[in-house]
Image 1: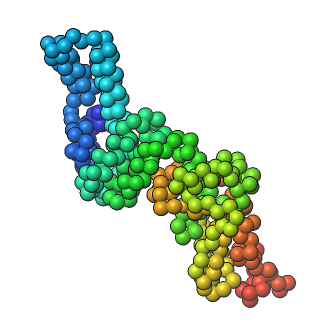
Image 2: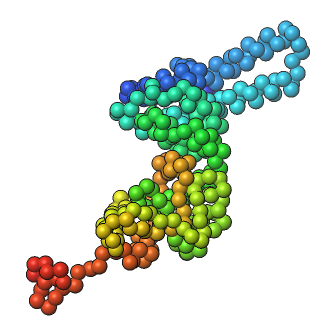
Image 3: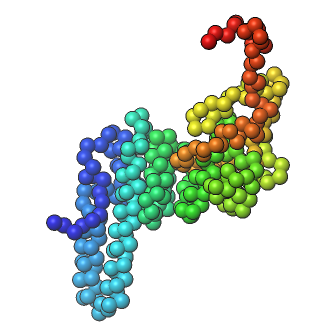
Length: 300
């Protein structure tokens, strides 16, 4: 049995057209990444040939051999990282996606930054970015890819925790009303961590004044984990609603699409308390069985 442990997605079996197109696109952009031979075996064979050639010119020292060995092992690991990220992206491709439309420069830059990523959870994030760009070219800017290349795993986890408080209030918006509240502290969010996310460019954090969503109609639906909450605002139009002290930057808006954050227990009730003046008033039944809005008699 071969001891070759490198991975090649050409061994995944029959592929959909978008998956096949993505592999060809990646191969073209990064130089035959998925040719039907194992990169580690090729690299070792080439290294051996280089050693033989070098022996005819200079005396090979242990230092030369160690340097060559390190180079081969590093390149094999980077190749494996690139293949694993691509492999994880393939199941996320949509039937209608056309990866051939991705710019070559974007693909080259993507793998230049992602090839050193060996952590499985971070590879999952990179795979979502690759699949997202394949499904809709132009979704992720080079700036976002470059930022992701410098993002620590701890910062990624902190941002994901922030996103667990996100509501759809027009755009996706983390509702952070009080950075000192216990419900946020349990997820590692406080003044210092929010200031840090602001400093690296993912959010805008205003610890005092906060933000508002403006120009809203009389009734307005917001969503948390896909479930709606209706708000009833005082004016017929041009209403304002406070949305806390955090807004996502453009960079944050792009990266939120690759976050998978479950909802937080008790957060809906917490938000209802913050917005209690905007919640529809419950109808009160009259003694004769009608509600105060003149509705039909209630029936049990």
